[in-house]
Length: 114
Length: 115
Image (cartoon, rainbow over all chains, first blue to last red; front, side):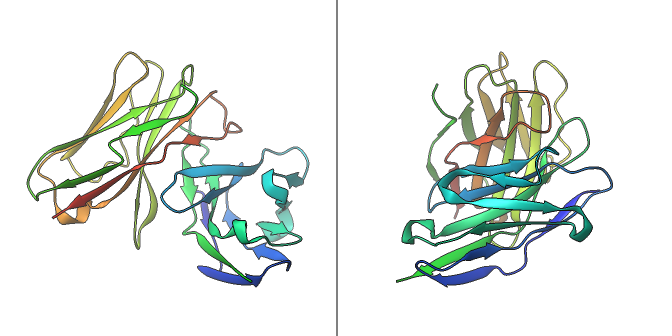
């Protein structure tokens, strides 16, 4: 069975600093991995996805993530945080059954300090 | 439509009442999912519809929960005899294709409060 673990339920960074949000996965088959962002009172928006092509995936709003099979990781990064990046971020893995439902991590709330 | 539309956006109901939550997916998206987002539980899968296939109901927490999808489009999630633990945000998502590499598009959710 697939699972994801997000380390750190809350992360604070200063504006302009590097953003690093951690996600580790467990999967018995090559995984499909996703990062979503949720702004207050909104649904989840797809940031980027890994689908076994390039291991470095670029997404929207300057975010990127690198798939590292040896470390079973898919950490999300952004070189320079903006105030508008403050939100909750979810890592997800698609299950290997025909439903392709997502198994989500518990989320990381990012706070950006002025 | 341009996005996934959910209604109502907020619903307050008394314990024991039934509620219906509606999801209108993106036109042409064949897959539709319901998730529940609650404090301490994260995002939980509830049910999945794909075309005319039998739905995957494996995530429904009790027989008080049911869902249907009419005409392969609009879906309704029904909770009977609501309990306080049903209070959560219910999110609907649709997906264009049948492969795992297709991302979901989520609606803004329905915030359900059972008092």
